[in-house]
Length: 270
Image (cartoon, rainbow, N blue to C red; front, side, top):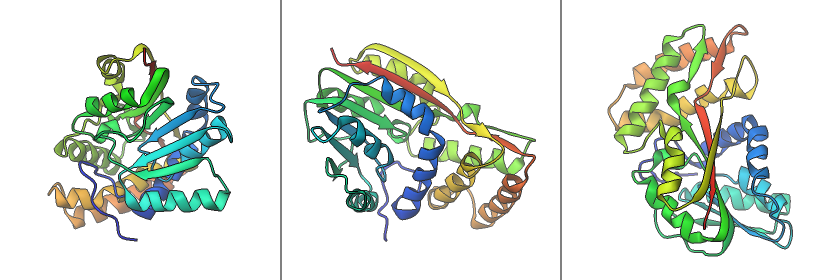
C-alpha cells in the first residue's frame, strides 16, 4: 500500500504507521481510559477523533457513545483511513465514519459533544488553527480532550548514545517541518487562546523494562527514516548503525526506557 507524504508529518503512515499506533494505543490504554472518563456521559452523542490514525481510539469512543451515537474519525493519511474502515467492518462497528480530512483546515461537521485530538498538534505549523476548527465543531458545552508529547523528558537507563541520537533526530526533524516536539507543556495556553474555558491538565510518562513500551523507540525511529533522509539530517549508514545499537540496547533485560512525557489537557466550549 503506497503512502502519500503528509504535510509537516515526519513519521511514516500507511500500514506500518498504523501498526506502530496500535502498539502506542496499548501502552496508553489505562491513562487514555481515565482521560476519556472525564467526558462521560457520551451515550447517544456525536464524538470526533481528529487525527484518528487507524482508529484505535475511535473504536473506544464508539463503545462510549453507543448505538444511538456516532463517532467521526478524521485523518489526512488515506491509507490509514482505508485500514480503519476495514477494521470497523471486521469488528462489526456500525456507528463510526472515517473521513480523509486535513484537521488544519475547516472541519466538515458541527454539533459534536466531544473532540479528541491525540499526537496531532505537535506536527502542525499552526496548532492554534486546528484548535479553532475543533472549537467550531463542538456544540456549546462540548468538551475537547488533547494528548500530546514533550520530548524533553525522554530517557533511558543506562545511557545509550543511539537512544540519545534517535531523540535528537526526531526533535530536529519535527522542528524543520515546522512542528513543536515540546508542545505538551503549551497545551493549556493553546486551548485557552482558542476560546476553551475551565482548561485543566495532567501528565503521564510510560516507562519500563519490557513489553510494548520498549518497542516504541525502535518503531518510532523506523517510521522517521524517510523524513530524516529527505531533510538531510543523516545518512542511511548512520540510520543503520543507530538501528543496530538501539535493537541491541532494547533487547537487554537490564535496560529501561521512558517515553516522551505525555500531557493531557481538557476544556469546554462556552
